Image (cartoon, rainbow, N blue to C red; front, side):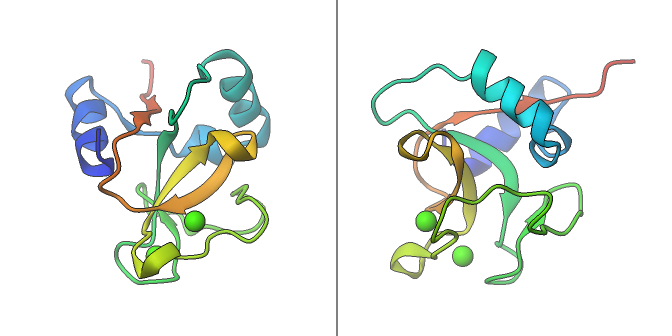
Length: 115
Ligand SMILES: [Ca+2]
Ligand SMILES: [Ca+2]
């Protein structure tokens, strides 16, 4: 799914792309160790983008990205080809964060609140 399709999918199951769980390092690492399934070209969209303003990374729940609440891989985000506005967990970087073209087809990490 594209990043936008991933959001729609997560919303269809009463959630959205992951934000809190990505900001929290121990939760993020738990997800990477227990939920992520390695595979060729398999990466995971998360709820973080710089769609609104290039270079300003923001979680979809409105929280601004900081060094403390993100885990971008070395050299990322690099706005590759001037067209990378959505964040993924990238397989080749041990599922650290990378910015990529929002139209790529990846899996989604959804998140929802349990009542
Ligand atoms: Ca960008
Ligand atoms: Ca990148």
